[in-house]
Amino acid sequence: MDPSSFLLWIGAIALLLVVSAFFAGSETALTAVSRGKMHQLERDGSRAAANVNRLVADREKLIGALLLGNTFVNILASSLATAILAATLGPRAVAVTTVAMTFIILVFCEVLPKTLAIARTDRFALAVAWPVRKAVAILGPVVNGVQFLVWHLLGIFGVKQAETEEVVPAHEEIRGTVELHHKEGTVEREHRDMIGGILDLRDLSVAEMMVHRKNMTTANADEPVQQLLEGLMASNHTRVPLWRGQPDNIVGVLHTKDVVRALVRNGGSYAGIDVMALASPPWFVPDTTSAEEQLAAFREKRARFALVVDEYGALQGLVTLEDILDEIFGDLPDEHEAAARPDVRRKQDGSYLIDGTVPVRELNRDLDWNLPDEEATTIAGLVIHEARTIPEVGQRFAFFGYKFEVLRRQRNQITALRVIPPSAAADAAPPA
Image 1 (cartoon, helix red, strand yellow):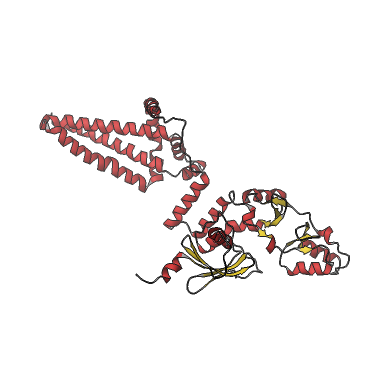
Image 2: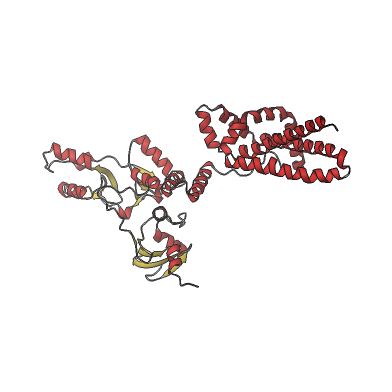
């Protein structure tokens, strides 16, 4: 073989290897590309991002075309190399070509382009989107035939094309992505908690975030007006439910703004003020209503306050717009609340003294704990659920890596607990 022909064949092989590297890198970049980012870039007018989205929309056809092109050029390059070396090496050409081409293809056509695609995924995908679309269009008929054959072969083993694996819900995919970035240090815990709180709204019922009726501030509508209104002004609550006959019989909701206006009109005198005329009708919602539905209902009714009832119509508590916002942003104390919450107190040994009524979700958010909140709303409820009994004062339990000690109990309610998280327990353990 003359030198000019030899160089021509070497150039052809090098070109095929470049095409092979292009197909391999494109496959990695386009299958790992951020679809959310590409969608946003397309909305901003990026034609390359639009090409990426069209390719990723039919992932099966995309991968089929890239694999077909990659396999074809690799085999052709190896065949040409064997033909060139056969003239000089004879029977040893196959062995030499196999070793040499395996090394070259592995390093320069697989590992190198795929590593680059992983390191610069979005940039790589945008750069190759247009030529890959052309390649997929050209190889499309062949890929369709291959897919037809593959699915019929899989059908022999009972795998149907209509059957698909259960897709992870979009909410859980977002949650997993945020959690991953938090572990990598690119998303702060506060931002992770806020996004998680938004995602939890559809799964969280108002019963899990409401103020229980035992902790509600209410007023007897039949009390003397002065006594009732003075109690309302001293309560530090904007809205207070009014009851008659029994505390569960709510007949209205009194707003302090309406009381102040009435007092101003009346010259500061309580005489002649009709409390029930100032009160608005109570709004009752089922305890099974999700936080997402309740938020939409608050927006639709232009309200911020609702009373929660069970399936029998019995009063369970109240829920406000602020309660839902607290689930998203964490506890938002107003100017009348203390900076540090008194119901959760950290001790020097790393343990915590916690009131039994503190919700598990708030502990997980504020202390970055990982206690389950599916079966119980409060920390006391969690201990009772796991203990399968109402513990006595002094009893100790260990659940989920945490240690619990009952400090106080009032009748059948646990009112105070000492909790030792795993980190404090590990610090307190004697060295081995």
